[in-house]
Image 1 (cartoon, rainbow, N blue to C red):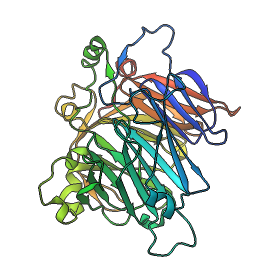
Image 2 (image 1 turned 90 degrees about the horizontal axis):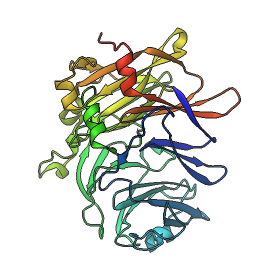
Image 3 (image 1 turned 90 degrees about the vertical axis):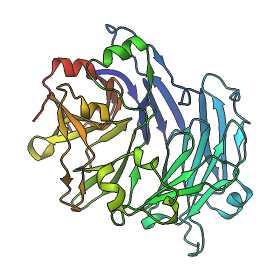
Image 4 (image 1 turned 60 degrees about the vertical axis):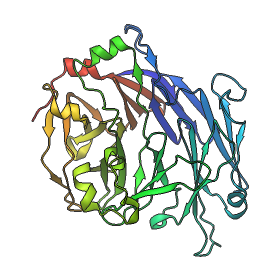
Length: 405
């Protein structure tokens, strides 16, 4: 692992597309740094796929006096307005501004859509008040939007509701269940397509979905000889739910279930037993261990050593191609597994790859990410300096011993 840059203390960090994105909450500043390859490595040319976060867009939301919310749009490579944006600023509806006191907010962007989720913990509210809202804009077409969702915060959560985009026309809103909406028509409230019931009341958190990166064709052909890339028609979402004894349940869910709907899906909620076990794999790990999802791959730290003081890296590949043609990369897991905490059985197949030659101490690790051909690990030194290290996946698999037990 090679340290490549230093980063300040921040609340939300993410690595995607060969760049490190950081938000400094105390300083109120954002930072985007390229993660440079080692000097001896050949440079890699990356090509962004259409509809991804290659639109040179930066969106910043801020709240004034807990009521007025601004979302400013700009271009990353300059100080002016984005050339494709409908305007410099997105506006909330009059109803949203006048009736809602914002205490927390969450902003996300995918392709032509920007969505803002807000919640309120106003102690003076009544049971009839709407305590969360989610509004969506087509930022290339209009600065206003009539596409608004409202509801009560599930399980008393103090945070805005979780949500994620499933392509350019579907939105998944995570409350205590999974609510799938169509966002084809941005002039009206999103259309509910289906409600997928989760197994019991859970306080769910959706880990960020990172867009896949398009690579130089020659490099892509070389990579296919050792690792399978994600099937673009099947992706994963990752939901975490706290459990007893300081443990975390991790729901790995194939997005294929959200596209295979019949006309009656919205008529009644779909029970967990009808959709969950075959489209989900539930993992368990101590709360301080890390997990990240990209495409069809799941990277997680696996506890080893006395009192789980160390970890190894596990790569779980849920791509159908990887399961069919693993080529010795790891163990294919098709048999159902049961979580001993909640006694839930799930059976989504995957290939398990263990980087068995490397062990790391748990205490310095702050977070980790996987991005196609590299793994990134953010660690803190004894002098409180954060270091971002990189591991080349292909080199590690070729030089190390892959566990198949």
